[in-house]
Length: 347
Image 1 (cartoon, rainbow, N blue to C red):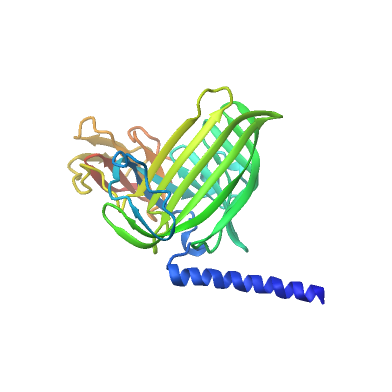
Image 2: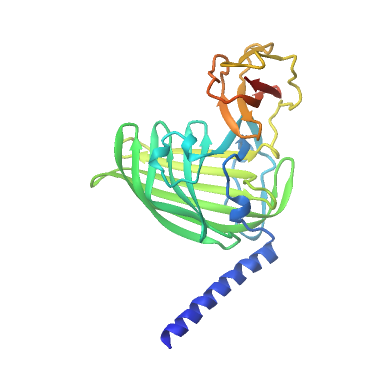
């Protein structure tokens, strides 16, 4: 009899949970789902790093509630473009340390590894690698159980190991995800309704044996608009300190989708084939760029025929491209004067 009552109570909790998220979807018009929002291999998200000088009293990240208005119209973009590409774990540096990863996120020299689980629907953070600091979580953190709607709250413990340059140790802490704001976001070139703000707080303590080594605290605000897979705005505050290393290091990075933020002086159509000569085309081992733009700083991005980012570099001349299979590729050139895309063929 007791077991029967427990089963009924458990069933009722599941029903209430389903109803709860259904009501969120109905009244707030925005939920984050695994099928739509979780990245898959081949996805690319482009954004600009944003200038926040106009916000002398701080960004409105503390605005919460069910009817928010976030005004970010005074943010401006800065070149170069920031590209997040989602790749197979086998294509990422240090992939062997994350054998259960489903996909990896690449941003320049930083790789972040994730595991996708279909039942229950959730995404786990397995760790991250960069040349100076890497984190490997043996107790991986759940960063989302789907669907995610207004009022969502999740705290999950995380533990594992770290490597800082040549120093190895343990890391312990937790990650808390909350969705405590929904409303309207105003961007320089667009306004979105029913936007949900997802706040992530990561607190880690680093140690070597029984001795403390340092702390790592990170708070991220992601603003998701209906029908947009990736956040239209990302704000990241990070504080880390190495014991005995003096004052804490505090950084703030703000990134906005390149679709809704503009860069002063950047004209997307101002670069033409007359500005650049790309040869040989078709090519075999190397691509060479000759430009009439003098000493302008260029960013080169090479995509395959399906739009997957394969290469991102600031010096394409002399770069070995012989590793790529024969086929059709697209080379995108970016600088402060604009952008230009050219089809190239690998023999």
